[in-house]
View 1 (tube, rainbow, N blue to C red):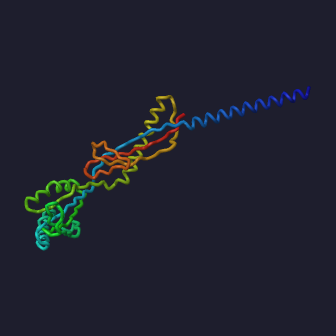
View 2 (view 1 turned 60 degrees about the horizontal axis):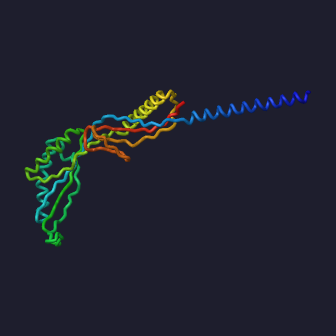
View 3 (view 1 turned 60 degrees about the vertical axis):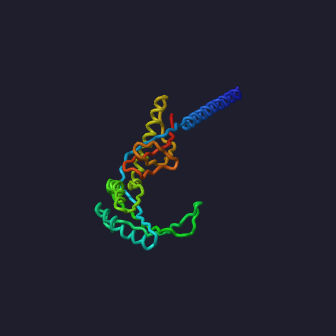
Length: 243
């Protein structure tokens, strides 16, 4: 009888142990299942910025039948150009000058090929001005073409407008994008009667600096230099645990 009771006790212990083991396995599976349930969302944010540095580059050119004459024209035209810049607040010591370049032009035959015979010479010099007054840079870029009426051959490039505090702003706009991603994830979780858990991982996209009304994007990022008023857009891909 005692042996029979011991056998029943042993079987009971084994049975209880199996039940506990199954319960632990199920609990662990549920915990792991819930932990592995994530929701992935994309958050974005943009901020308006105004360029704080303008750069204007241009090339003064002269052409004549001889090298000496072309050089002389270039030297005669330069003071006229410098006087204009000075009137706008850019004396000579605030202008960056590149070395003077020169090259010959060759006569072409009836087939459009060079004959090797020099027909004229070109001399040119590149100038550059920079200013934190971006509106002044824009004004000069629009006005300076009027020098052509005075016989000055000055060709300007499109002005470039930079925002120099981009490093600090980058952190701020990415934080806003991450917050937007969390808000979107919470709304989705609420809509499905789930609770939003901690952030599992996040990936920051490249920044897009574009004109205000532009919708252009690029996998490599955009850095617009053509406009004074711009916007910076950040995108964050984030995964959150849901319970």
